[in-house]
Image (cartoon, rainbow, N blue to C red; front, top):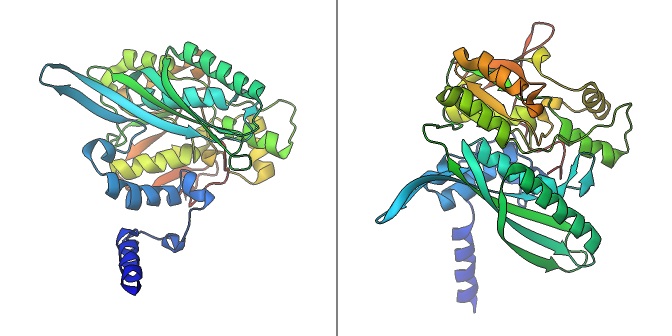
Length: 370
């Protein structure tokens, strides 16, 4: 029996993650169990991907680490095609909030991940994890919201699954969606393609979604209600690609971790420096007020209906005009540029003329917002 116990311990040791090469501005490898920050789109989550998931699942399609995997589908007797595939899970609390619900989030989040990869979204799956006792009327409202969002985005929900867990072992309703899209010919966007000289544009005000969720949770009231920006961006992105095509090098939707985390990830992936002009960042006054009240920085607050574009400098004005001509891009702004200096760092020029480094966060300041 002792031999069996020894063998079991040896197998456990062999299967345990190797923490020896984890980079640690703080002792991240000392966490013996998952914490909320591992799901926040910050340093903890990135370490988990880089040192646990990526080594286990490594393959060329995964290593790009974009919002969607780019897949070359073909073979003997099969017409060649380039597809994008993405998946996302949604655990937001509350399930219904100003501007949307978990239903719209589940559709729009995956549609947007496909769209910023340069694909035309086509099909989604939808899987539900429901808690025993969850009101059927609320589930019906969520499903109706998903159907409406899919119709607006022009995608079809073609397959799915339902599981139920015991009362007290869930949180009402969780949803996973996966999506497939067709990549446009001649378009190749990637977190790896940002290059010095690129102009950086954002399609509208930042922080709306995260602060809409937090305002409900904290019972905050302002003269103007903060509403989530949850929306499908594929139509707006299609207009940009039709206008300037290959001049778009990189696109992302800055969801968890906000604009700052997205820009840091692109700087790291492409090995470039990024400089933004802080006064140029579009932030609604009520969102800024809520952030000030809660001690938050809007650049780290999640968005669910915004996209960031890295484009050749000569195309920047045309992209900006195209965005502002679309209802979802009325507040678009040019916020910065890519530089060869300070590679893999995000630096902001403040209103006082000083520079500040904006690091990627260790965890997250707003849990359960998507």
